[in-house]
Image (tube, rainbow, N blue to C red):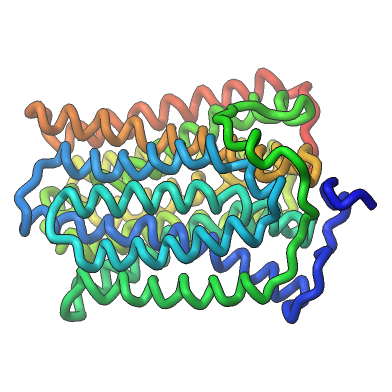
Length: 408
């Protein structure tokens, strides 16, 4: 076999102490920890806001700058692991994440928080395509499912862990980051011991030129997946940016604990749905996801108006289920069409669409709040947009019902 061509099977190509199942679990844990780290600051925003006195717009800017940095990294480094291997990219990314946690832990103002979010976005963007492609390299059947279930698990763990730390433990802005830093260092050691899953290919430098494209086989499936991706990740952006403040102003809860619990309910429901619907056809999963997004968003936004915390969390669970189903259906629709040396690039495009959908509406919402629009009204308008997008996604899927989708 030419040493500069991608391995066409899903077997690891280099010897190492980690058997493929252990390597698969390690890669899945990296996705979980990266997404947990990305959400860890969210329940702390009220703490930072009280200490440093910044506005709602600044909160959404901090949220949005992470998404923009991640997008830039996906566009530049998203395909790099297809050329130099998964391990080098992931080792560097996990070590950078450990450093980022220390920046968070020692942050003393908005500038340091912004810097940490930018570097975190760069490291996460570089890693997402590599880790997701690595899981498919190791197991083509379980890889797409793991790519769909790991992000919501990580999001839920990050939100709940931070919320509990803030509410029950001292030094909340320090401890959670030190725990995550230790996790990243352990994962870097595991990656050093893990076998590589693809051979090196020429073109690593050329792959760093920003590119937003898909192989021909993935283009039609991607057109089907985009609307539901946009709707589901827009709802995730609502929970990541406005829910901490909403939980305090509407329900009078401790915003750090309540937002962490909301993130856990949202993401945990999504992860459970991914596992429950893993054997269903991708189109069916996406259709359910769009319906659940509509119903869950409507219930949660209505509950805010009625000040019903119980209904809000029930709506959050239903919306999270829609998020998980939508993302799973999209990944299982698009990713199996990619060849081994195309997987990281295709996953990067999926995440670019997702994080644009998550970041841009959140920043727009923060802008309106900073200009005097009521927080509750902004959230409800945001929710209405998500419901409309979900309806359009469902309509689009029905209209394109004759387009074949890979049912893996």
